[in-house]
Image (cartoon, rainbow, N blue to C red; front, side):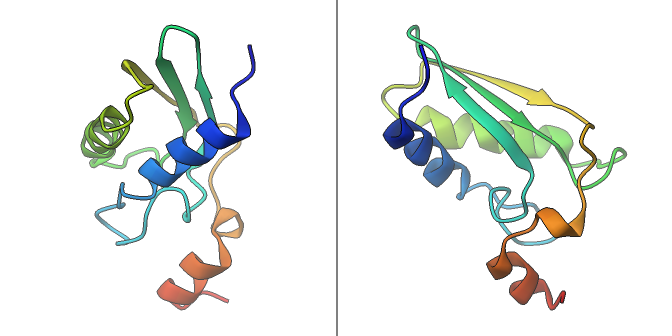
Length: 104
């Protein structure tokens, strides 16, 4: 079963509360979230990356993702899948994130 567009928006909205501690911008606008899914049992699968492989704050961000999604009644369990392909780049950031960080 495919996730509804409405539920996808709810999950992405919750993930906008997860701020990258180094950059001070949320992980959605940074372009770190590649995919979100929710199955019938309430398992939310978040496929995302980090700004760098050696990011020491990865576990902190994963904890924040769990906390943010825990506030959605439909979400019973969260599985954060950190991937390195495709590699993250500044081009993946939203216009808002680029403006906030002064990147053109």
